[in-house]
Image 1 (spheres, one colour):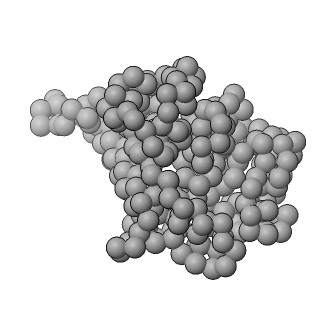
Image 2 (tube, rainbow, N blue to C red):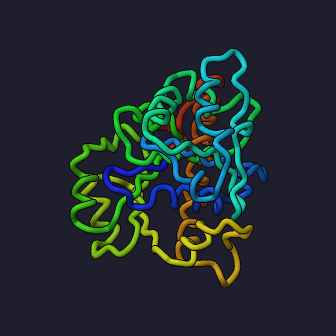
Length: 270
């Protein structure tokens, strides 16, 4: 899954971390996601949590192209609130090259893992651009983060996202106050899925503490942001499962001759 923005810094890293924390465990058989800081402008997590400079995104990029590049888990750090993350070093230079390698064919193979691997990778790419386009094309889901004002939404419209190129994989997450209804935004930007993520100080504080703790995802003390991200995570996981079911149905139709499409749902026939 790729999480990014068109312009500015509307909280891409926060949304990516929240998604990793709120990802439904049943989606991957209990395997926790891995959040990867793949921002060309450099990472924030090392400085925020006092993480060592290695392992990092640079180690993952250095393994790209090797016969046995290993798993992302070899570069994972455990964040205080229970999220596994591959942190990036601060600085544009080394991270730009690392993201370029990850966006290549060998890099995408490392991110996707082997045939027997299970789990979800959440890529925080920061501001999307030409270098990250291959990552967007390879992702099962793309979450575009934007503020709710007229100017940020206009930037999204002007970027020229092609709805048909994403095939239902694109979700616009509008962060903070927004005077426009979701239906109007979806129709104006030609994006099928639009969700609102409220901003709250408690979640931000929990994500910045160096002491151990957990982001609540169940119970009556769940913060507004985490409650909204939990719903988004379930939607994304269900969409991926539905896509896999459709692909399996299409594969079965190719392998087994059928007399006709009677009784077959329309979403399978397409």
